[in-house]
Length: 66
Image (cartoon, rainbow, N blue to C red):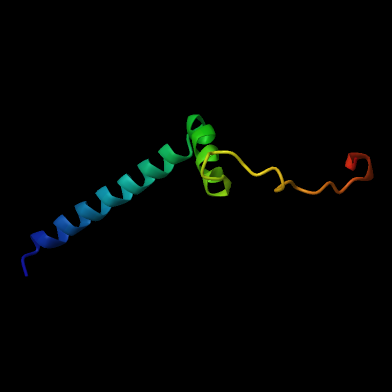
């Protein structure tokens, strides 16, 4: 096998690592927080885009119960 392939593989691995780190940094940018938060709640919504009223978190403090 040609010794050049070792260098090619090394450069490819470094490029893939840099791509991974770049995507990871992009995903954690604060400007994406609102959009990703909205997308994370998408499976919990009905087909018309609204949450059903009976899926509330129960109150644990007595003063919150009405």
